[in-house]
Length: 247
Length: 247
DNA sequence: TCGCTGTATACTGTAGGCAGTCGACGACAA
DNA sequence: TTGTCGTCGACTGCCTACAGTATACAGCGA
Picture 1 (cartoon, rainbow over the protein chains, first blue to last red):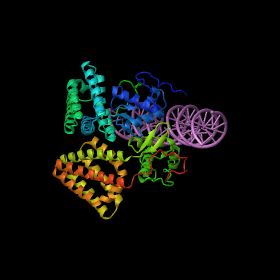
Picture 2: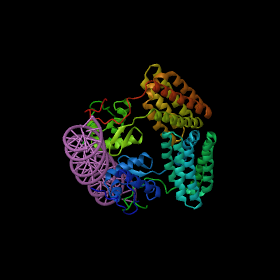
Picture 3: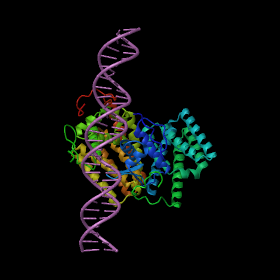
C-alpha cells in the first residue's frame, strides 16, 4: 500500500518523508514539541498521535522511544509518554555539560584545524551574521547550531561530536529567546573563536568557547529567573480535550 | 496469559524480570553482547531472538532500538540490527570522552563532597581492593564501575552523571582485560582520588582522575596493538547457522 | 458530608500476520 | 569465463487485534 503522506491534518507539520515511518513520526512529534504545540508534562496518547498522523500505533511507539532516548519525552511503563518538563536545575546542568563538551571540541578543533574546515566555519559564520543583521532570529539560531556542530565535527572525535550534538539539540529548545537578546555579541565571539582555531591556538579557542557558552548559560538563567518558569510541570492527564494541538 | 519466564533456553541468561518485557529482552541481549555470545558485526534477526527468548518480535524490536540508542547495536533501516563493532579509533575516542566527563565529575565531586558520600566511596573502594586481592577480576571490574558511577553521582550534576554512566558502560565492554593487568595500581589511584575528594581539593581530584583514566586508555591501546583486533568487523550475514549463541 | 468500594473506560503492552523489499543464488547470453 | 537478468527466500516494517491494567467516576454506607 502506498503510504498516505502522513495526513497533514491540523497542526501536524508536513515533512519531506525520510526512509521509515517511525522516523517521520519522530520528526513530526519533535517538531510539535519544539514549537510548543505539545506542552511540557503533557501526556502523549499513542492512539491519539497515531490517528492524528494517519499511521498505526506501532511506528508511534517506536518514535516515542527514540524521543525518550534523546530526552525529549519521559516513558513511564504502563503509563505512556509525557513531554519532558525540564526544571531550571536540569537546564542549568545541561548547559554546564554543553560547556564542557564544546570547550574540549574547540580545543581539539584548534589542534586539528585544516584550511578547508576553517573556510566552512567562516561561511556559516557569515550566514549567521547576515541573519542577525536581517533580524531573522530563526535563521540565526539555526546557523548557530550549525556552527557549533561544525566545531565539534572538526574536533576529529566522532564520539565527542555526536554527544555534543545531542546535548546541543536539547539546549536549543530553550535557546531561542536567549539568542534574541545576545545577537551581535554572540557572533562576534564566534568570529574570534574561528580566528583562534585557524591560528591553531588551543588554549585561546578553549577559553573563548568556555566564555561563550557560559555567557549563554548565564543569559538563560537570568531570563528564566525573570519569567518564573512554565505553568507547573505536573503530570497532566486530563480527560482528553479532543485535540492534541494546543493546550 | 502469564508470561513464561523468558524461556531460559540455551545461552539466554535468566533475569529477575523487571517491569516490561522489552526491558527484560534489552538486558538479555545486552548480557549476550557483553559476554561475547554475540560477536561484533553479527546480524541479529528479530524472529530468531524472539523465538530464543520466548516472546514475540515486538518487544524484541523495541529492545533493539533501546540498544541502538546506547550504541550497542547499529540499526540499518530495512536491514535490521547488527552488533556494534567498535574500531580501535572509536574505542580510543570513547575513552577520551570518558576521561573528559569523569575528570569534570571528579572536580565537582571534590567541590561538593559530603562525609556521607566519601564514606560510600571508601566502602566501594574497600570492596574493590578485596576483590583484587582475592584475584576476583569480575567483582573488581564491577566495583570499579560502581566507584566511577558514584563519583559522577557525587558531582551533583545529574545530566553529567547519566552521560558519563552511559559512556562508561560502553567502555566496560572492552575494559575487563585491561583491569586484569593493572589491578593494584588502579585501586591505589582510587584511594588517592578519594582522599582528594574528601579534602575538597578540586585541582588534585581532577588531576588524579585524568591520569587514572588516561592510564587505562593507554593500557587498552597497547593491549589492542598487541592482539591485533577482532576477526574483521565486516557485516556478517550468513545463511543463518541455526543458532545465535556462539559464533 | 465524607470515605470507601465497585464498575466502567481508556490506554498500554504484547501477539500474530501480511505485504513489500533487499540480497543471494542460479541460469542464460555474450 | 564473465556479466546480466530473473527467481527465490528471508527478513523487516507496519497493521490489526486482544488482553491486562491503571485511573476516574458513581453509588453506597457511615
